[in-house]
Each structure stands twice: as structure tokens, then as C-alpha cells.
Image (tube, rainbow, N blue to C red; front, side, top):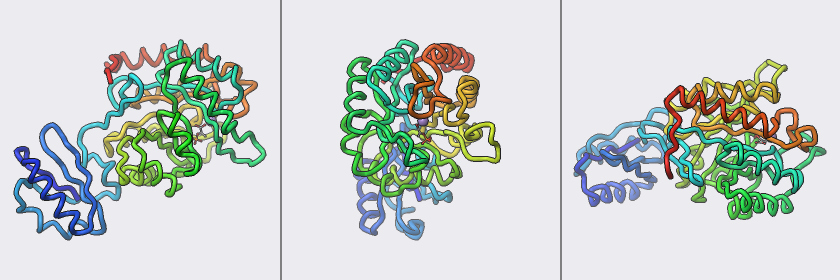
Length: 341
Ligand code: PEP
Ligand code: MN
């Protein structure tokens, strides 16, 4: 349920409503708009409290949110959520581009790739050090050694880092270094992990599970938001279908649909979405045309030597061309300008 305050409601009136809601064992989340404050009320059957609040001083209306996802819902927050990361604002008009190898798989090659993606126009770096591999015999990431290399990449390029966290025990270590914590597709419904990153005050990039519906994905975001961390970026990375020529089927319907349903930024990962390097640029451009707020692209200076996801990794030169084309598509859509943080 949301309690919409009148545009002239005083802060004391807002506080009084919040206190009374919480006295009934419900949790509150505030959304301060330009025009009015909205109080999100979270709990079991909050609408039973409606009559207590409709006539309260400063209250304009009390409205149920019928969808199961509440805080990520546009009905709770009408305006797009904007998340500053480095000198970029994710969720604004211009396209946020994250690039780098699937995993940190060697110091020299990782740093070389990072320098090149920066030169090509990336706004943030990616590189996993804990890798969620389907087989326990596949490369699992460099772990501690990888963390030191990530730190060096950040120092050399000055770009923010996006890095996947697999387990609650690794959150503190990674949160000390990464600017954005990634929750991978396989962990989208790891509710303990979601709640833990919800307690941080640091952006989280939440990938869509490979078999998750859009509603399940938004409910996973809700686990993070409901802990008070409102900085969630959604990432469409392809879902499982009957098609076998591609690794996944990039569900571009999800982009405009999520933008209708939610105020959270949504980006596209054409690398995992296709699994094939030859398709990455086309689907990156399609993602931007569909309205994605950003892209996450796997780039490796020597894809044939990559210890994970080489087949879908593009070279720095291909990435440079991708960025140029993304800029053309963005400009055609009137999305060229950079918004300062
Ligand atoms: C990744 O980003 O390298 C990754 C493992 O992605 P996903 O969780 O989407 O499979
Ligand atoms: Mn990968």
C-alpha cells in the first residue's frame, strides 16, 4: 500500500504517519518526489490499516499496490531511479557501458584489456574473481589473487568496477573494492545473498535468472530494496528457450516492459544473451534501441585464451566499433548527452 501525502503536507505530518504505521508493526519506505511524498507501507495485509490513514492530517490518498512487487513498482516511485557510478548516472538518458573480461584470468592480459576498453569508451570495468561455473572442474576464478588485480585495474584506469559476489561471506571483501556488486543469474533467487546485499549502501547489479519470469526478477530486486538499499540495476542477460544455436535468448521485450512496471534502471548483456561473439554487437544495438539504460559486454584482449566465456568475448577493437555504433543509435534516439553525476 502507498500513502500519498498532500503536496503541502509538513514534515511533521509525514513523520506522524510513519510513526503510526510502524507502531502497527509495518515497515515504511519514503519516496520524496518533486511534488509530494509517498510512504510505502510494507507488511502483511497493510491495506487493513487504510481507514486509520485516509483522514490523517496531510494525507491525500491511500492506494493499494496490487502487484506483488511494491518498492520496485512505478506506482511507488513514478520517477526513474538514477544511480551515480563514477562520473556517470545510470538510469539517465545516456547509455552506461560496462566492459571487460568474463573473469580476471591473468594480470597482464586483464590490465591490457581494461586499458583498451577504457580507451574505447567504457564507463566501468567488469571482471569476475569468483566464477559461478556449471561444472566444478571449470576455472572457478582467481579469488584473492584476482581481487588484487582488480584493485590495480581500478588504480590504472580510474574506472569503477562491477564484480560478482557469490556468497555472503565474500561480500565485505568485495564491497571494499567494487563500486557495484553483481548478483549473477544463478543466484537471482539466493534470498540470503539478496538480503545481505540489501543491507549495504552500494549499487547492486541484479541479473535475471535464466528461467525467471519478469515478476520473479522484480521480486528478487524487492529483497534488496526492502532492506533499504534502493540502488538496484536490473540486467537482462537472456533466458532459456528451446533454441540451441544461441546460448540463451535475449529477451528484449523485458526492457520496455520493465521500464513500464518499474522505476529501476535496466541494462542488457548481449554476451551471455547470445553466447556467440558474432551476435554481440547486433544485440547490443538492439538493446539500446529497445531503451536499455546500459550494456554489459564481455571483452578480452585474447578471447581464444580466456579461461571463461571466450566464445562470446569480443576483442577490444570490435568493442571500439561497438561503442561507436552504440553512440550513433543513442544519438538517433536523442540519448547522446552525458548527464553529470
Ligand atoms: C557473468 O557475468 O560472467 C555471468 C556469470 O553472468 P550470468 O550470471 O548472467 O550467467
Ligand atoms: Mn561470463
